[in-house]
Length: 502
Image 1 (cartoon, helix red, strand yellow):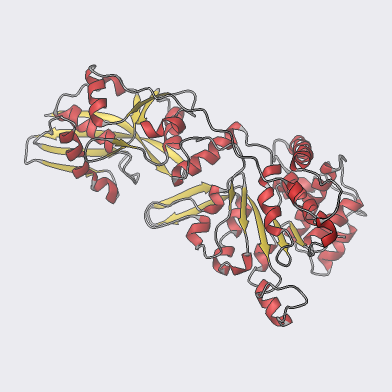
Image 2 (cartoon, one colour; image 1 turned 180 degrees about the vertical axis):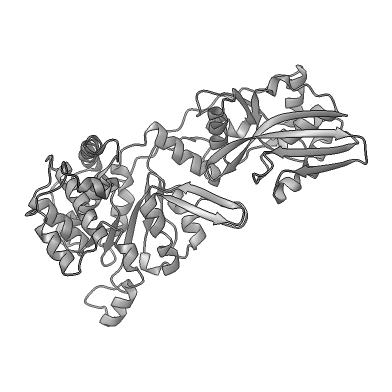
C-alpha cells in the first residue's frame, strides 16, 4: 500500500490552476480509477499510462489504484496530466522517489512507448505555476522554448518517461536543450506598395494610432486588402506583457511555432468568409478553443469580403468588440478568452463585384447585400470609408510614396500622447471611457461639437457613435501633433464615419 502526490496544471481558457495529482495503491483487483471530473482524454489515459510504464522498463503495480485530481470540483481536460499521473502511481506503488519534483509541476502527454509528447497551453500553465509560487516545472522537450519564456521558474525537460524515472532515481540526467535563437521575422508588408489611395492610407493611419475599428468599401482592385494587410506593419511592437498574452492564446490553440515561440509582432488573423461562429469567437464541444478574434488579441482581425460572412457570425463579434473579451458559457462553467483586437472589414459594393460601368445590380440588390452588415455591428466601427478605383496616373507617377517606417513613427508618437493623456484609465483613444470624454478636463467646446449635435438630432448618429467620433478626433489631433482637437478634426472624424472623406 502507498500514497503519493505530484502537481500539475489545469487550464480554463488561458487561466491556469495548480492541480494536485494524488495516487493511492491498495490491495484489491488490479484496476485504475480516475476521479476529479476528468474528461474523455483523461479517462483514456489509464491504458496509455499503463503501456508507457511497461515500455519504459518499470513495473506497474498489480493492485487497486485510485488517482484523484484536486480540487475535485474543477473540470480537467486534455492529455497533459499523463506524466503527472504516471509519476504519482509509480511513487505510490513502486517506490519511485519523487523528491526532485516535490516543488514542481509536471506536464506532458505519454505515448504508448513511453515517449513524452508536447501538449498545448504549456506557456499559460507554467505562468500559473509561477504565480502560485511553484519553483520549477517538468515539460516535454518540444515545449521547452515556450516554457522558458517565464523567467522566474526553473524549467526541466524530458523526452521520455524512462528518462524521467532514471533522473528521479539519480541514475540519469535530464536533457538540457539549447533554446534556438528566434529566426529573423520576415519584413512586414510596406505601405509604399499602396499607390493612388491617399484616402485609405489616412484611414489606416488613424486606425493604427487610435486602435479604431475600420470598414472599407470599394470595387475590386481599390486596395482594400493591401491596406488591411499592411496595418500590422505600422502598429507598435508588442510589449512584454502583451507578447505573453498573445503567445499564451496561440499556445492554447496549438498554433505556436517552436522556432520562434514569443509573439512580438501584432498578429493578423484573416478567416475565410465561410467561417462559423465558433471559428470566429471560439468554442467547440467540451473544451472551448479560442477563435480568430482571440488569436488576433493585440493585433488585427481582417474580414475580407465581410458581406459574404453569415450575419449570425458577424453579430457574434459585437459583444467581444465592446468588452475586449469572449465569454463562452457552457453547462460546466464559463471560459473567458481575451479579445482586444482591431477589426478591419472590407467589402465590395455589390454581389457581382464588377466595375461600376459594367455592374447591372439593381439598387435594391446593392442595399440588401450591404444590409448583411447589421446596424449594431457597424455602430461599433469607428472608421467607415468608401475607396475610389485607382487611376492609371498613380501607377505611373514619379512621386515617392511614404513607407510604413515613417507612418509607424507618427503612430508611435500618437500612441504615446494618448497613453499619457488617459493614464491610468486607457492606453489609446479607442479605449478611452465615455465618462472621461465628458470630464471637464477633456470636454470639447460646444461650437466644435456642433456638427455632431446636428447629426445626432437628425438620427444619423447614435450616442455610441457620438463618443466614437470624438475619440477619432483626438486621434487625428495626436497624429498632427496638436494637444486638443479642433473643428477640422471633428469634421474629419464625422466624415470618415459616414463613409465619405473629403
